[in-house]
Length: 229
Image (spheres, rainbow, N blue to C red):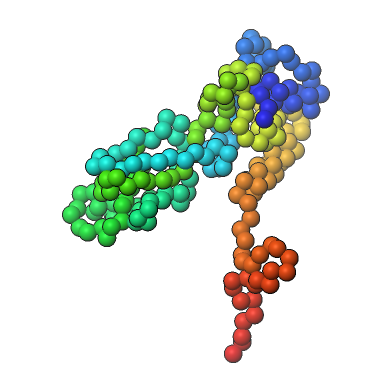
């Protein structure tokens, strides 16, 4: 994992510029611009995808309360990550069904329902004592040299937590655009390709069926041969 200084010097070196001793505290407008671009790109990459490298696990022990505060570093919920031992949990909930549960007196069939309400998770029909497990994406793709989470680069020693090459290419194409370099379009295409590659590597491939082990003898779960009769 590279720090801010290494990331920005990688951008300069590839473009044929001299590397610099530092950026974050520099009074040079060009250095300030590069730090601003780095922070903009960090924000854009963070919000583009639910990166597995930024996921955290949260456990909520339900009480009679109906609202449970979310962590200070909460960015978004990991899709389909909610789990309770009873198995009866629904999130997100269509508004009509949610408000029927919240304000009505009808039977929910043992299904606990929830929605995000501001900076909290609202559960109108909690099951006291039961634990809700879920995953969420943090809003801190950067850490200080002392391993403290940060939402922005403010020091040359701040470390990027995701793919180094992705943010280098992202800064490069944005920097090339604002500087009106002729190779900007080429850099942008390279960044977009890297972004797609990073997402594909992060999600992995989905196995249709069978086994990767040689000689397993297992076949896909869906029959490839279909009768025409």
